[in-house]
Length: 278
Image (tube, rainbow, N blue to C red; front, top):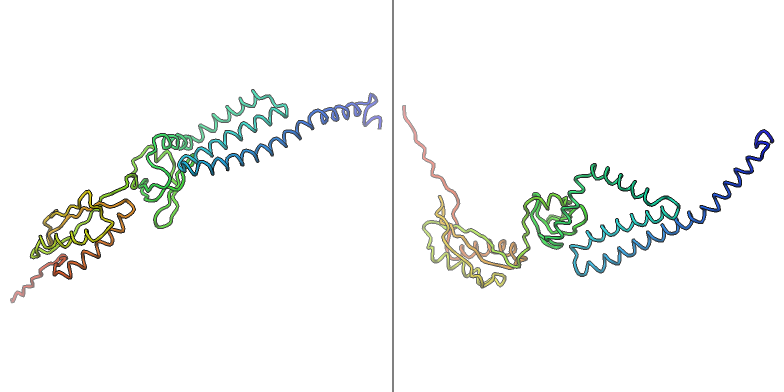
């Protein structure tokens, strides 16, 4: 036993030192753990309440701002917990700074997406609920987060688009204005009455309450095609009614033309066969 612990009682000294360290740091560790647990709960609770409140006022800003606040608060909490344990805050901040620089160099694309998200929120080319056409996709904006914008297409697909791509490329905000022009083309045969066909189209437009009286619909001969005289028809509708009006008008005009004896031609070719006798 004397050989194991030493004649000078070194084992007893080590035990005393260990007990001293436990008595010194155990309360700090326990307090730090409690602070971390309670702090994370409070942060999550606060972010949730903020999300609910902001969603009622500005859904576009909500996800981005809540995500940013959540990340900043948790970083500050970790620094505070580290200082409670006894880790020097200046050293901890220096380590975070160095790690941040390394991560930033490795994640340049993500930083570009973050900057793109900030630009989207500042200049607001679109907001949550708008219908946009970007990066080859057309759909409704469901969420603008820190790095990505989520778009749901009309055939029920979810598209995740990086904010950097949206901020640095052209996009079309289909629902920016309350009204839109519905562009249609109807062809009639060369032998049909142009004025009669125009009157039929106008009657179909006037009968549809979704077609706005102002600006007045335009019905004009747009071109003389190979097989038909083509009318360009340009009524105005509310943005939400654009495609329903377009689809319904195709059927209504076709039925009205049939009832009034106006034909819609289709490409035809005359084939001549010659028999050569030897």
